[in-house]
Length: 147
Image 1 (cartoon, rainbow, N blue to C red):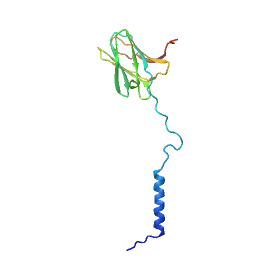
Image 2: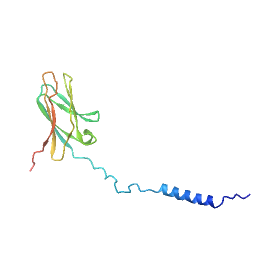
Image 3: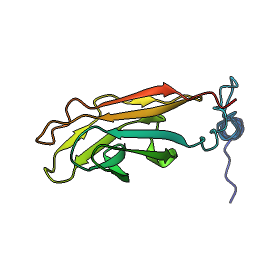
Image 4: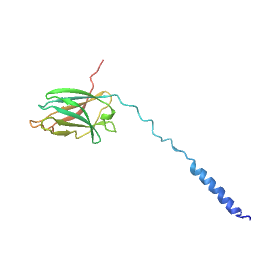
């Protein structure tokens, strides 16, 4: 028994094969807009925390809503920290959360700061007698010249 499809069926089969070939081959970046390779890890960022209050304060960096403990600054004391990529937001900005030990009060920096090369982050912890830190500030300052 012989099946007969005719010329139309052969033409449809050829068109289907060509269409499948075209669909399977593609240029993933036709306009040359592929993103550059992700940059390597940044140099550590220096954070200087000055506690101008009576209570000791725990300092946390925030990445999203996940805190990472940096350390404790004693009352009327200064501490320095080296921050690496995991201590920063995904976009490279810095945001901090503080917790006063004793009164158990919290402060979250209202703004994120970007620390560029040649600068460091400066945290001034200002609190009242009840441990409220609403006057605290997070800012940037130029690194002193080393030469």
